[in-house]
Amino acid sequence: EAGVTQSPTHLIKTRGQQATLRCSPISGHTSVYWYQQALGLGLQFLLWYDEGEERNRGNFPPRFSGRQFPNYSSELNVNALELEDSALYLCASTRGVLAGTDTQYFGPGTRLTVL
Amino acid sequence: AQSVTQLDSQVPVFEEAPVELRCNYSSSVSVYLFWYVQYPNQGLQLLLKYLSGSTLVKGINGFEAEFNKSQTSFHLRKPSVHISDTAEYFCAVNKITGGGNKLTFGTGTQLKVEL
Image (cartoon, rainbow over all chains, first blue to last red; front, side):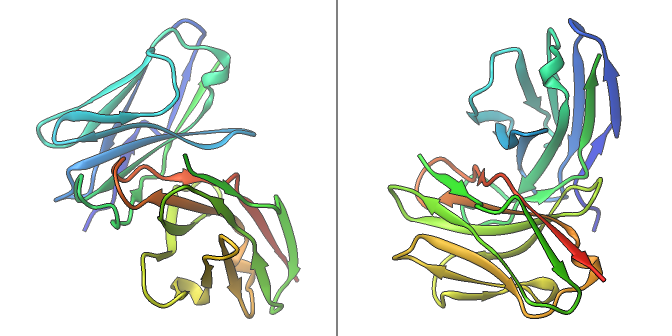
């Protein structure tokens, strides 16, 4: 069974540009979570999508947004990039919204560097 | 809101020695508890989780953790470490009711196993 996949592996942008990160969950999983792992700040919850809808978001500005497609894959968009957006962005998936006990399976991440 | 404290940012230990990585949490509601491991340049992998029942939880790679409700702790232990255990370890919590499956992570403990 394929795990969570993320693309691209690395992404280099300049300040003010937009970045798009992609995530494909494990087959059968409907929930996708996005986390930011920035140096010195640890892992911070960004967004949670389930069945195509945004269910919850962390304490991030609106220029962080995303969506979930009918096949449950997800996109994270970061607009007006700032230097401090440089981080590893991790995607995780679970079976669904009722699965509070469910293990979150993580992808390998996308390393975003903003110059 | 929940919070997780991992008191030790780095733990050096010799191979075959025992190790304990500490995790304390704070929450006004009951929580589920998790330990994840992150190897260099990889995503997170679940080591073990506590949902209910026995307070001693056994995970993969010989790791175990004990839930102590009175001390609000969930320390991770391994009786004999190997070089391959060198990685960063994250403790995380998820509240049992409401909010879905959003994990709150600690800042991580870097375990360095030396010969």
